[in-house]
Image (cartoon, rainbow, N blue to C red; front, side, top):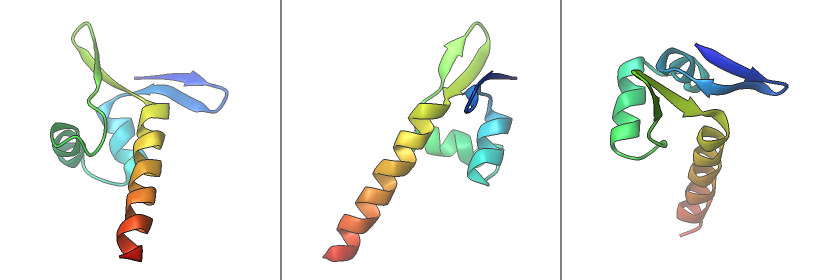
Length: 71
């Protein structure tokens, strides 16, 4: 299930996150557990990720990669 905005889905389920990141669902859950990506929000019995939070995590990883690469 995805809730969409004009720029794509706002809330994404684990299937959508896996596709977005190009990884398996198991990897999505591992990355959420190790805090590489944000943990999902719970809506009833469902888990959903906020697209903007995933994009921010990707940007942080890019900055960290560039900082680590300069050393």
